[in-house]
Length: 213
Image (cartoon, rainbow, N blue to C red; front, side):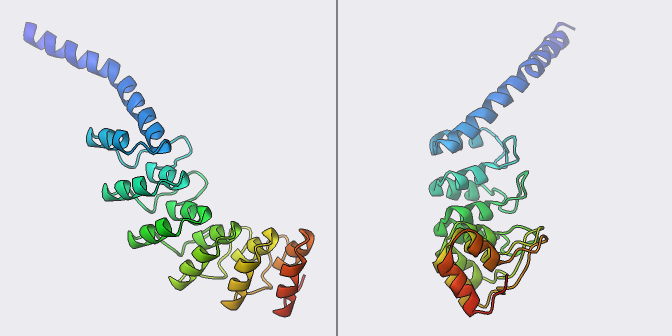
């Protein structure tokens, strides 16, 4: 009877302190990934922490490593079978975040590990064009990205590159036959956005390709 009581006491104490222990490990993992502390992250994962642990916005450890530009840590997490297709609360994937960062090596690595290039709504190509990362845009197109894919509101890669004045990205997209006359849900076009933001050089390129407001 005493033995049973002792076991019950041990279990009760474990259940009492377990949430705090798990919470501490969770915070340590997020901090380790943000700080690029590979040894600390590896130690926590070795102790059983789920490699697909997420923060409050559903960013996985992999997404955080990508967002913070920690390529070596990205590789370690992928080796531990981190999910490449997970989405955060905003619908973003690790590939989209890598494209927005312009990190071509990480983009390559994620695609090699099965990250989807084509997906409904916002995608990696649109994110790369939004930030003017022409090399990444070219790579994604070579890998089969849909050049005229649009966001839920009808925004295309060409529209965002035009609005931000990334002329080299615009040149590439037009050379790859992006449609210059797509319209958003509100009727905006790449040309209208370029003119509104004062990017006359971009507007002239669009007009040469038959773009309309």
